[in-house]
Image (tube, rainbow, N blue to C red; front, side):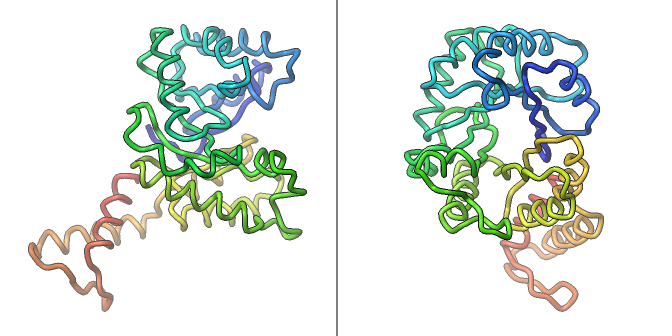
Length: 280
């Protein structure tokens, strides 16, 4: 499952879900959590369940349930599981123990299909569990983070500087998510860019994410999808360069370092080239 772009859609707005199908995102996240007020949770579950039953399913459909400790997660899962969601987005995840918990709840409901995408930085305890996601369940399909709930949880005024950059604590959370994902052997998914009208800012933000090792990004508006897909799709020049590196090492077996166009390339370059060719 390729996840360059994951577009959030409020779970209580079926007309927006229908429109989102044609937005070009690699997956949709039907939201039962933050985008839905408490008095509309039941209605949202019914809307999401109905949408999951539609055929055909042009893109994978994830559902963001409410946190496991909220008292709402079991009702969310019970309402949607018959529709066989492709994935569950788990907010306020706190490491491997959260994966085990959700995995067990899904099994009790008879589901062996849905993958899990945890949002891994939304509580103080979550930060200390970012290295614990590996080798817990094959359902894990990636790791993502958020910069809004954590400052609220610790009483911080904001997660950003005046120019929009993250302050040091949230840069750390971002970095730990990146390394935690790769340690677990799954893609790292960049968090949302809130200002959906600022496409220049989005382009720079998404490019930075790919540069740093993220494989995709979440979106809050259909207008963001095209830019995100472009940012996380290797260019023709990158693909050509990667193929040349792979071919060079294939022609020179047993040699650890080689020269290509006057540049030294070695095992890390070969590993990077192979990964890029898989992602293209």
